[in-house]
Length: 365
Ligand code: NAD
Image 1 (spheres, helix red, strand yellow):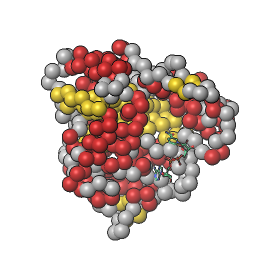
Image 2 (image 1 turned 45 degrees about the vertical axis):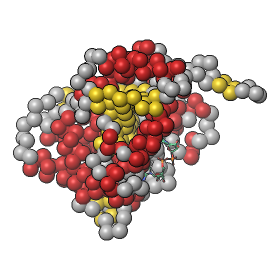
Image 3 (image 1 turned 180 degrees about the horizontal axis):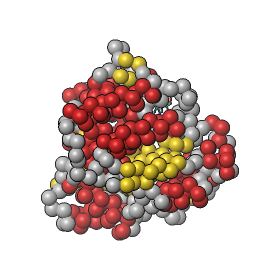
């Protein structure tokens, strides 16, 4: 198997964590006898410095020619005062739009070794493993009309049949590969657009009768994520609700340096850590590479359909944490403080160890 990965390291700690991810990706690909081609391109502030634009056609073309896009992070104080369309963050929004990435996946999975550093009780968290599937290109963030005048401000929450149908279908497919359970989150007791959403989700359900479907109002879902997160498997929701719920779900299980994400469309997919460019620690070897490595694990699963490789990568992270290794952002008493590079090396060593232990020399791809 041969796959092309577009690498967009970006700004601040983006290049450091991308470098870590590439090292792990390369190790995994070698173990699975897979050949990879990396093509690097500029994005964000780094691109603005060279081309006066945060996202060039050349970078977009690199992405169009790829099987998967891997992004570090963009932004930094140097570019904060630029006009909105030239800011590094504008590149991200444009990229997601150009690649048609309508679905965002954020896992909420607890690493056992970090369970005591959560703000929630161990008993509540243990066994938590769900994904938030957020519709990313529709809803109130894009609906028309929008605006404000002296007396009023307004936005429109709108979904077309096709927009809901395709995200619902993806949710059912993902659930079928997991524990066969979907919770569709809406506000159908108040909003017509939510009733419309709910009707379509139920229609799509007919094609996946083996998957259990529940509906939940968004206010209740916010409570339930904190009260009993174990109950969820795939939490399907719209753009606005997903924006909020994915942050709640992420935070119950770890720190910002641990959170991966995938944004997926019909043709393209983008993988990136949830965190930003962390200018306060850039270039100091302090950044936590695990969110980036975990995003790479999602890439193996969703873009390359290599779930075994993805699982082994996650296991390598778990084992590294269990051995006590911590970058400063997640360190605690008794842990072994390591740099970005050392953490990456530990993950690679653990990957090789697990791979050999399982004596799985030959995998079917
Ligand atoms: P941030 O995520 O960059 O940092 C917030 C805090 O978390 C900082 O203290 C930082 O040191 C820490 N942190 C973040 N990632 C870490 C990691 N991997 N390891 C260790 N510590 C980590 O958020 P911010 O400070 O609000 O934003 C900084 C810049 O990043 C801004 O320009 C912002 O617009 C941009 N940003 C980009 C993205 C993206 O590229 N997807 C996302 C969010 C923010």
